[in-house]
Image (cartoon, rainbow, N blue to C red):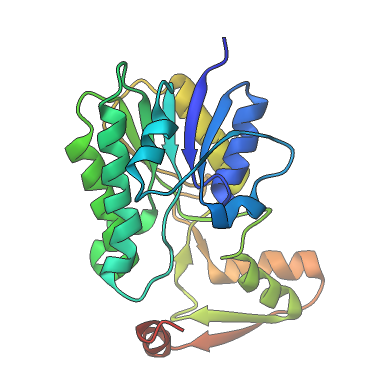
Length: 254
């Protein structure tokens, strides 16, 4: 008998890939979608769509009713204030968790957080992700739950890392801060497969998983530049961008 899973963020980069992989693995997909996102629905699959958002308790109840598992991928990555991020990344988690915990039997619940949650003092986004993790722990009741903290995710459909890679293939590498800084990366299909593995085999509740691609210490920017130069057959020039300039841009939310 097919298992049913509820997904938020299924019209997004990670959630869309996850929905496709889960459908291939035999899961029945029920996905939350805002009306404005209907045109972004993933191709090749046809989930059971629940129209609504994380502020709509009725749509959340329809989303989770009778499901075997929930994967919460939806999240805010841009905003001008802490409240902008908390509304989705903290309050939205709390509402979904509360409703899920009331189900009988309660589903398994996986929260897709971020490696940024390690250091909540660094940004509004990081703080909201850490607060979302706390909301899950606080309101989970007897649910079996886990938290994934992926690093920067790349792959087909990515819009965050892609501009940087495109600049590198044009011959320029705009780098923030020191060239010695390191970055962790994870391919989107690997993340989706890790989620499916947790759904199928996860035996420990209330666990955090910090994911990486086998390079536990991440990559230096020079290592990434070397890969691009090898693939592209031409040199890449580093352009260092001061951290102070980035903070100024972020402060006015450009």
